[in-house]
Amino acid sequence: SVLAPEISILTLNTPFFFEQKSYLPLGKIRYSYGRGFWEEWWVKDTHNNEYWLSIDEGDLTLQKKIEVTYPDSLFTRLRIGLVTSDEWIVTELDTAKCEGFVGSLPKKITIGSTYQYAHLGGKDAKLRTLELVEGKLEAYEGKWISPFDIGKVL
Image 1 (cartoon, one colour):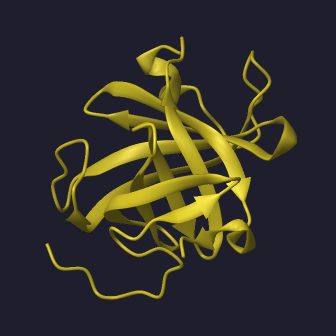
Image 2: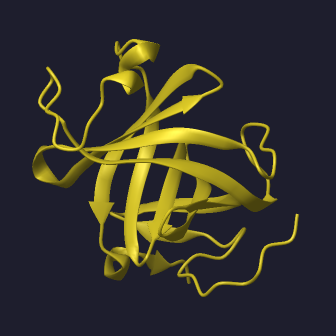
């Protein structure tokens, strides 16, 4: 697919540093939602661990897929401000629509596909993202990061 160019601190296949680790952006997906769009970059570190770096209106998060014990039916009960039993607070609920993608990705993506998502805030600037994709719950956890902490590999 072809994405309209957007200014970004990341470039496909160009390594960057964060917290003394090197990461390589391999692919990017652009999603739209009610207020605009955001981009998710699929990146790997030098040990081949996979992460998603999301950029939304200048806010960055670096997250890794995790296993959670939440039931798939959780989305029917989520509300903004709800505190989960494991002390995460729901800060955003919406639906994402894939607008396009470039590069390599770890999963099949279809332009126009949608999924529900929830952002949950935790202690120490942690963020958990829950996604309901084809009836299955996927979870990612990480933290908010400053764009000024991203460095280019020389």
